[in-house]
Length: 627
Image 1 (cartoon, rainbow, N blue to C red):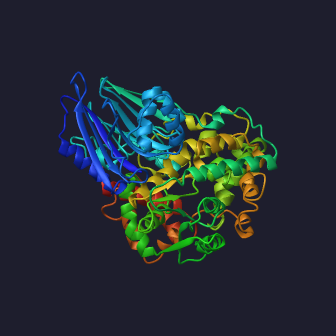
Image 2: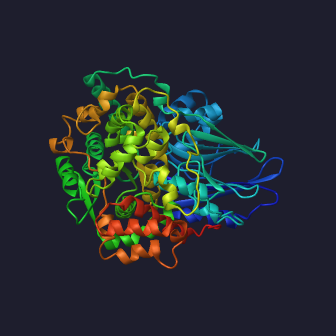
Image 3: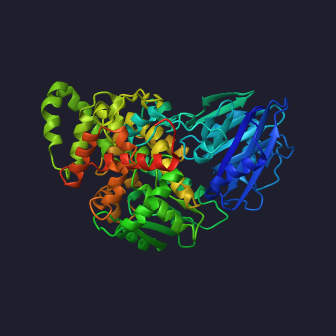
């Protein structure tokens, strides 16, 4: 796992090697084990090419130095990620006559590109972002993995193409455009994250998951090479729970096994839920040594899952480590999380993950995690509720819901949060708006109520809403896999773990596993208590009953309680203090009402207030222009 940086500059914008080194080294946390730089020009000498790399050594520690050149020196690559099927690809390429000088997956990427050009990318089973430069043709290809586990940001600074694993080096580039992107503001308030390709800087975009982009002669063109299996499987063809659980067990076992390839110590993040517990259980089958496990919790017992994580750790005799997050520790790490995210932090859970990563790096360089299980196998309450909303729409006229039902539910106490979310979703008859309401901050119709200026809110990329299916579940899973995951949870996982200089691998997000789960009938996913019916069946003889039968809790942080206590002044300064930009972006009366309702326990506005507070912290940290 690493940090990559680079550029393609026309003759007016050429920069020094010192600039290349300085901007690359802004990501030293992503690669504390080494660095490398390459600077050259295209064959016609019209453009300067720069490639930078920071390395976190996991595989082939001695031989995987980057930027790496092919044996003949023609191809150069700077690469972030892991290709889990690189040994199989290496064998295939050797049979074709390709020769290798190292044991690294980086060299396999180079030779795969030499053999198959951009068609190679769909053969890669892993997580990655890279830039491959062909010094003979002056062509550079940028790529990102199928589900967007690894980031790649692009900036256009007046004829200069600059790319990086994180945003800070891009806006530190000489003459960078730092203009605030108001189009992102409405999307952020709807989603609690900024959907790709947008960022909060107008000049910076995300290369979308499953895409590659070809730069040649000053022009950049992006193309999709991967569509999630849900888009390619017209209808489920697996209806037997026994058959499905048998297939899942075998595929998941392989997915975990290949992610345990490492030349350095590794472990697992363990929450005590079924997902991370399944990962730890499977890892234990493939090693004779105790799995190192790491768990995070809180002093407030109603929010902490440490007891459940401890149960799993004891069951599988792991080398277990725990971190208890205090309000003070959380507040101290919050600004650091925003700086590493390069954006407002979407959820309070980001900060404990950052803290846990910094603790874990003392003993491991890589961990396996449980991300993706809910989004591929129907683990959220919304997956079971969305089809009920569709039925409700057929029975309840819109005007009657808005005039009678919605006000009644809005008046319910804040403790009935899930019912209020369900009501908000029931109020959205547009599929695009409803997908964003389930986990969002405020509905689209209420944006003018909060924001002092008009902002756009239609999706910048309609692909996450494009699945044509009669299954409400498959449509919402498709949105989760193409928007909620890459732009929120995976951004959190990458940025927070890399801030701690450790790599995170996610066996539930394997492309082969995704292809399998796309074939499962809906009732095999959400038919039982708590969802993920197939996973529970597959783990029935593996995990303790207490874990299998647990109701899904989610990783909840007692932030709403903390800001009512000793940290209220620090929090309120972000929203209403004399230096608050958010106070200018929002309508003052509405913001004051929301704060008052939350502080006085009349409503739970934690998600909305968190979104505003993080927006303010982001603005203070990065100082975008034009606000």
